[in-house]
Length: 394
Image (cartoon, rainbow, N blue to C red; front, side, top):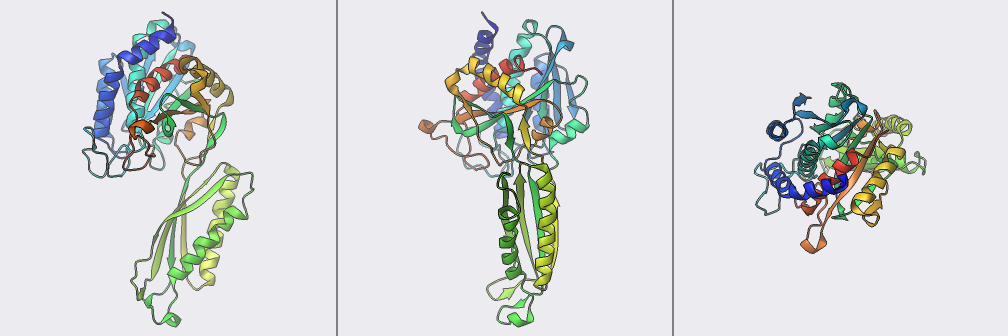
């Protein structure tokens, strides 16, 4: 039996084990930097496979699977392990038992899948060359991102991987299909926090006030020109504000308004310029209308760029594993991922695993209370990642 067939066979054999692992993780989600029980669970599973684990960044777990000639090549595989502050609305047997916390971005899938990959590769370690480094990474959902902390602690050293591979669920892609994109794929993401201060009072006496609500309305609209009239049309940019708190009432103007938003782009030079332009515009506009402004930008993840040659290798390998008709090309996605940090340190590829099944009603997007997956994706994801680990090297 060829190696590819052995991997597919083992992925099928371990399918129910992966489902059980995913259900446990989904039932016991933990927020970023709080994944203590999740890390213990991962350690127990890896130890049972005969692997030695290492803790990094407190709740990160790293292990090595050594094949023949371990030093000949090193490939790193990454899964994120944290959950989101969302209350689950699904009524399933594996529903979150931690109210207000949910694996709504599929990190339970990524973790269960990589555990399956580990089991496959550990069983086949006498049949491949090199070393596979497993990275179970905390805190993808919260700045500064667990990836940045792991890199600072040396996760990409001793041994140093020649490539880093990650996968992410894709609820817009049918189960059984895989998506790749060479080059620029995902955006940087920065958090914006603004406090507009004025002078509140009775809404019937506007002449005695400095209305921070009105000023904030002008500011939100004005800041859009940073994207529409300052960014090159060739550079994708998004500026959105999702939270505005003006805590007055119908006839009371508050003293201040708080605004929160996000800025995303695919160009680091423009990113820095935009930060300066937004801050300058905000402070001058608010001051011109009589108020004061505190404008803070919390710098988040950089853009994510897939290494072209590595991605081409993996895309070709994926076609051999699932069939060319099931490998699709992805468009640029303006979401952000801290896997981006790995792409700035080593040849890396971040691809998408289809999880959608309209016939079963599994159609909800990530970061929603009803997100779920067609669990056929688990064995496919595990088997494919095992195959890609042995077929992508720079």
